[in-house]
Length: 155
Length: 293
Image 1 (cartoon, each protein chain N blue to C red):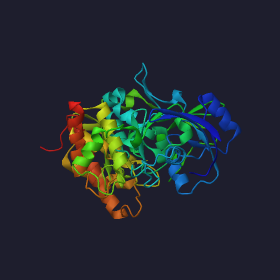
Image 2 (cartoon, rainbow over the protein chains, first blue to last red):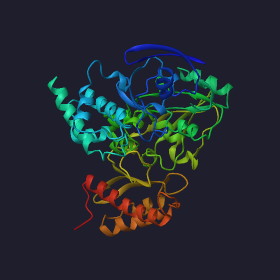
Image 3 (cartoon, rainbow over the protein chains, first blue to last red):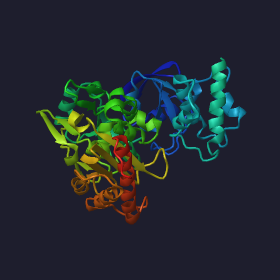
Image 4 (cartoon, rainbow over the protein chains, first blue to last red):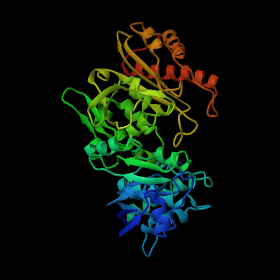
């Protein structure tokens, strides 16, 4: 077992974990945060996307032991009493169908807009290019990211 | 959860080499985007890992006083394609780096891992081949420098001994100064896909003649390759549409693509010629040459 300390959604956690534990397992099984989804488990689909120190990663491709001292944001961490503007936008334009890719999509969009609020449509497409969606055809998702951008600019 | 028995996570290279020398059975893990997939597929069992993720001395890109560019093996593809030095002096490497995977993978995957994984489709390989990149490999006893063109041994195999760690990729000024490059990756999807075929070309044009031309191919043989026959054929010949066709045909003299579900042998041979032609035209235009009257 290896001792690891990391911040998840603003809260500091210290746990003894086995070396084979993925960050995805740490989040879902240790912390019981089930918003992060496992899709392919091999870095292809982006369903398990989380933000680590401002950048997006597939949490199935990261060992939890390597996250010592890191700051992780999962889908649960982006909203408080109210939904985050990106979440609102996804609801308003119906960018969600089965919903499995949505947490990852929202976090990829958030990482982009946090860094570049003036992102172009091309940059938005690029930002979500590592997240597969088999329902929407992506059009609604891009619309949602654009609407979220407007909302965030107004804030 | 994976089948990992133990993981070492040293923070200095010296410490890593020490651990590796006394535990030669260790498997090195860099970014993890290849090793963890092997684990996921059950290809590695009860493995003991040596993570070099915390070796900060192996990250970053340096421009040395003599113009040599040194890339730490733990530098991620995101860092490479956004790096000023790379974009200014060897933009072809930025082009290759951004073609790789998607944002999540590029944030995680390292250039050293990409090389040492030995994949014939490695997006960094053809570009590093045309740049004549050297690899700095260290073990507990010393350092050796190996040209990347001699580093690949076969599909998924590189000439790295147990106890050795690849620390830097070195690109000399003479190999990029005045040269123009183009990397073309051909895949079914733009993002999150592996190359069906890839071509890197790098050249220098003077008086509308190639005074230096280098062509490398990915997924065209059991390892990434240089098309030495096409290169020497092109040397000092006046650039014309016909010459570009001939050079592109001659790339096949070094290539031996395989048939797979991703693409048939015949299709790959077709791609090699078409993509080489396109890439050559791009670098000719960039270097102020022309192939048409």
